[in-house]
Image (tube, rainbow, N blue to C red):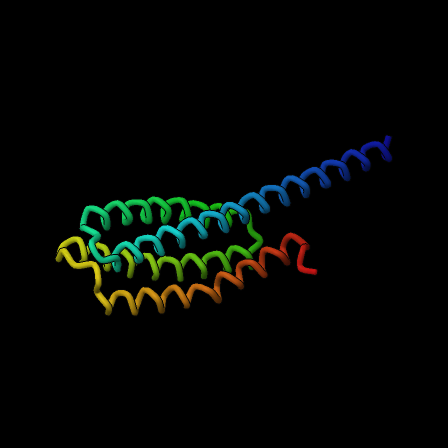
Length: 154
């Protein structure tokens, strides 16, 4: 009887660990995928802003797509924060902050272009490019933390 009870507890612990690993893997994959979608949306928006002959209507459409991608990414960041562990949650938060900076610049650029009717605003493009570069380090740090948490850091 004692042996069966111990075996049952070990089985429950194993099932909980498998569930947690699957939940984390799903949260990390979603975070990565939504981050890539957000990056793609902002690059398309920047390209549209710089394209000769594009219009405020074009810029507004790209901005809306990028904003929707931000909402998905932000939601995925919250899921990673809940899934943990702490090191991965902190790395995700650093990446979210870097992406937020990029989002802020892209939003300001889009709004200024729409308001003024001119998309080629070099001071915004320069800041946008710098913020895009700055997000690379936290992106790599998140991936490394996720690999370590999942035990795939071979």
